[in-house]
Image 1 (cartoon, rainbow, N blue to C red):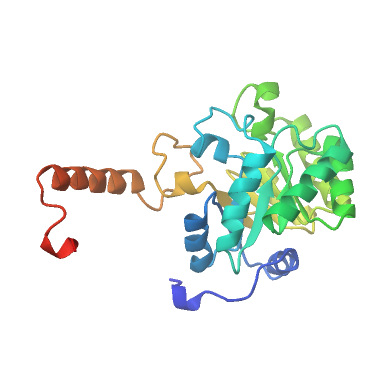
Image 2 (cartoon, rainbow, N blue to C red):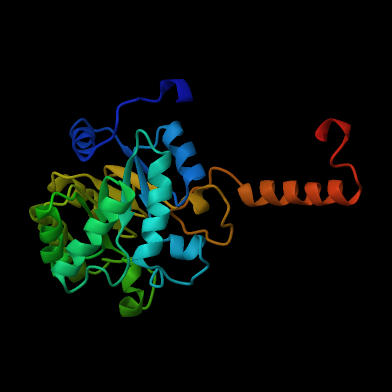
Length: 273
């Protein structure tokens, strides 16, 4: 079992991720949206910290990722980056900041990089956004792609069910992955697709494939911090493994604090001046 003492001090870059794939070392990635959480994950040895637009859900209480703004993503990302000394910080570009206009995409990406100090941005979509990806990369900004289930397109698909189960969509997913590689993406997140297909994509492209609900044959895994740690206890998809039950731990602690305050047990003589 790894310990804090065994965590590598090597700073993670896009090149390091490529080297990890080449030698078969899995890539660990979790989301974070604030300084304190990012500090813990970085110290634990997380390879990649994703400032996800899932902040729209877990931080702001929205039903979808669509409402979060560029300014809000920059706020979360700058808070995360201040805590990090090792992990690669990747920031989701929010809905409406890159689709259909490569110049706007570049402007949005430049703002994220300049105002947060992060290491890369992430965009959802395949061939249809390849122009925006190329434009961003031409400015020296690393881009991570995102295929399969793309939450920003929920109104188009109308469901969060598994994607690419049919042959036509599976072929398009493979094609899109290769097009994102050709466009210059350094890695791709593939979400909620059959494990066999995701594994095949990982074999056929040279860049790391990071799965979420995409099986174990890919190059790494990403999950949402609030799901993994049991803060959000209402979301239980098949692909999620909980590593803590913070909802119960924090609830019990809060109840004990309330009890201690109301009974005048807190503060005691040693807890005052």
